[in-house]
Length: 335
Image (cartoon, rainbow, N blue to C red; front, side, top):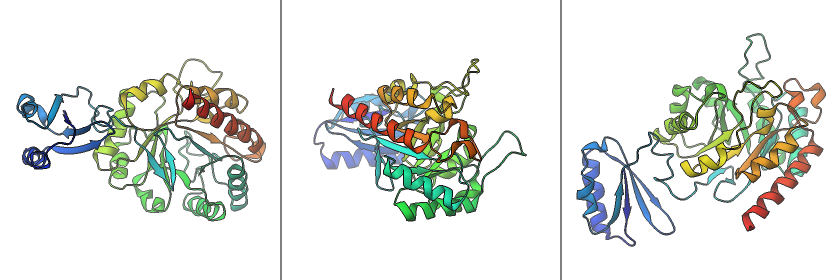
């Protein structure tokens, strides 16, 4: 249920309404926009008399929200949410470039790439330390050492760092990581989602390869309902019958999610198409569809990368993509 307040509501009446709702074990989330203030009510609202609330002088309207995701719902929060990642703003009209290798291989590798992507347009450095793999015999990442090397790259370049977490036991290692990523395989790891909700660090939630929009938003809801509002959605492709690319980058998701939720939306064409030559062609399409930023896999020597070299662009290609993406975003913002 949402309660839309009239402009400049009487504070005493508002406090009385909030106290009455809290007595009924209702959680209240206040959203102050440019033109109106909304109270989002979460809990067992079935017994709340909407007509009684609507009759109050300070109330303009009362609506029941039918969708199961409440905190992520744009009706609860009409204004775009802006998430700050180490000082980098994502959402609300800003545009962010996230770049780095699929996995951290060595100190020399991650620092070299960090320097190059910073010089050519990156706002945030990404790099995998824990790698969930289909085969138990495949490379699993450097683990805690990889996190330490990302921090060294941040110290060297000043770029905020992003890394993927795969289980709750790793949370202490991510205490000083600026952006925690949830991969497609863990989109519905509900224990992990709830654990990430108990802290305020920004979380980027990659869509599962078979997930519907509602399932994706419900996963975000797990994080937000546990107390963390700093969620970024990431479209990284869905599974289809076509084998030419690993996934299909679902560009339709971006404008549809823009209507459904106030959360920022990032696109990851590298993860989706899995072909480096395709990335420069697909990335601008995601910007045109309204993405708040791009996340790209970049490697200074893709042919010798430990993981996912074929889908990693080199720094020169990244520079061209970043320049084009920012110009397109600026053009669309002014159009």
